[in-house]
Image 1 (cartoon, rainbow, N blue to C red):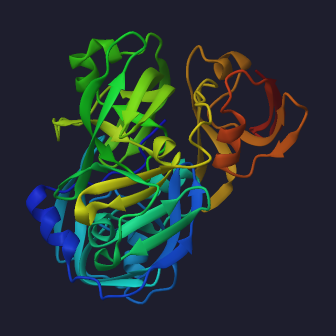
Image 2 (image 1 turned 180 degrees about the vertical axis):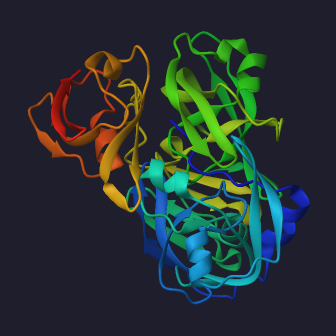
Length: 393
């Protein structure tokens, strides 16, 4: 469970940066995307560049490029701004007058930013040149078809309320969009709160510590610790547990896994948590932020059971540019992985599932998926200091 990427700017700065020049009228455009640990990876270009591999991220208040791409494009910073991340604050180098092109659409005179993204590449396990941020979500209706892995951009002037979808209101504030949800613990009544809509957050839902402390009925009876993750602004500590209920518009979801922040940035006190892709991908979703709405239609994922995903007790990473070398980064003390003898630095070479099927461990997604079911017996074939090691748990 983690929230992969977060860049939230102060309201006044965000409002002026996100809009830029209005998009030119055009017909709808669709492109395929790659879903990696809940993140939507697409290709886009900046200032006529080669195709860049970028995350489509409603939780990133501004389009971001990593420094290597900024240098490649000879981008010149015109100032800096403070961004709020879950681990604290970070300084962004701001670049004005950029042209960003995605899915056949072009936004000109954009203010974008440059920020190191090493943590995202390492813990996401995928080459990442940047993130397409809130400026695209403010200028277009964005349809994410999670069943077909397809994104469609719709200019607001061409948008027609779709049949078969239900809508719920969204609060667009500066460079973030919030939706009211009701969440309930195993024994408590649903409690309402405002949640940040994150089209790139891994997991189902993240609850802020202050929200849970104010509503003790939401605290899961059993919390499983998760190794800390690195985010914008620094490290973040999570735990994971079960929620009894989530009311999302006209729909109710039951017995889902939630992340609970153990520490948190004090910024944005009115926000109760983060709505992530584990919930969003159960629907075809239209992010209609120009009209302050979210449109939902259940898809084939809607009735699939929720899985724990963290029962193994390990956090994995890679060391770019070697994205196919999967390493154990941390092991939770007392977890099944710890009892089995896994150690930080172990390289996972192969996996044998309880069914006898073998998998080559060539991506973080593949390994995490193999470990997702808490009742599955697995054997990991490791390389530790050049020696072969086998563990089962």
